[in-house]
Length: 301
Image (cartoon, rainbow, N blue to C red; front, side, top):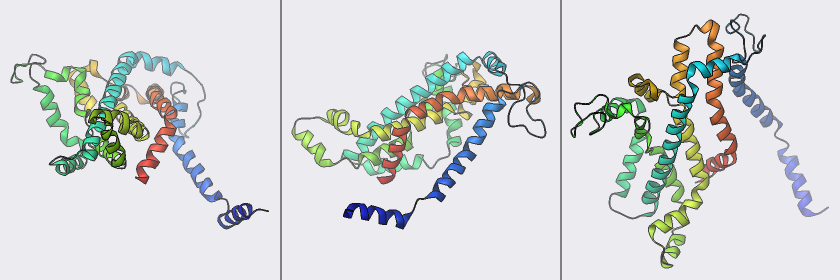
C-alpha cells in the first residue's frame, strides 16, 4: 500500500462521512421547496378547493384551466413584454455602468477617487423607499417630455407615461459598482502595466484584459439584478397607477388577487405566480454554475 493511499484512508477515518451535514442540507432544501410546490399544486386545483379545511396539499380535480384564465385575465402578453423589456434593459445597463465605474475606482488613479467610492457605499445604506418620491417628481417634471416645457412644467405626466420610467431609476447600482470594484482590485497591476507597455490604451485594457476575468462575478450580478427587477413591485405599481399599460407581472398578479373572490379563483392567481416564476427559474438553472462560482470568488476576495 502506498503512502498516498494510507494518508487518504487516515483522513477518511479522522473526518468520517459528513452524513449529518448532508441530512441537514436535504431537510432544509425540502422545506424550502414546499412553498413553491404548494403554489404549483394550488394552481392546478379546481374552483372552491383552495382554502378548504382540513387543508389538502394535492388537488382533488386536476385542471389546467387556471392557466388559461390567468393568461386571459392578466393580459399576459403585455405584462410579459413590459417585464422582459424592463428587466433585460436594467440588467444590461447595470452591468455596463457597474463594470466601467468599478474599473475606474479600482485601477485608475485620480483625485477624489476614494471620496467617490465612499459616496457609492453611502447609497447602499439608504432604504429604497426614501427615493420613491424624489424619483417620481424628477420623472414627472422631465423637460420636453409628456407635454412639459424646457422647465419641466405644463405637461401631463412627463416621463411617467413612458416605459423608460420603469428603467431610469435603476440603471446605476451602488451594490453593483461595489461588487465589480472589489473583484477588479484583485486583478494584478503588473498585467495592466505589461499591456500598457505593449501600447494598449485604457479602453483596450478594460475590454481585453480586465473584463474577461470578471465573467463569473458579472453573471452573478446580472442574475441578481434580473431577479430583483423582475420581482420589483412598489415602483412598478406607482408608475402603473398613472398608466395601466406600463403594468408588469407582479403588479398584474397583485391586482388580479385584489379584484377577484379568493375562495373561488385563488388558483388562477397561483397559476399567474407560477407563470411569472418560470423565466427566472429557467435563467437561474442555465447560469447556476457561474452564479455559484461568482459567489465563491467574491467570498474569497
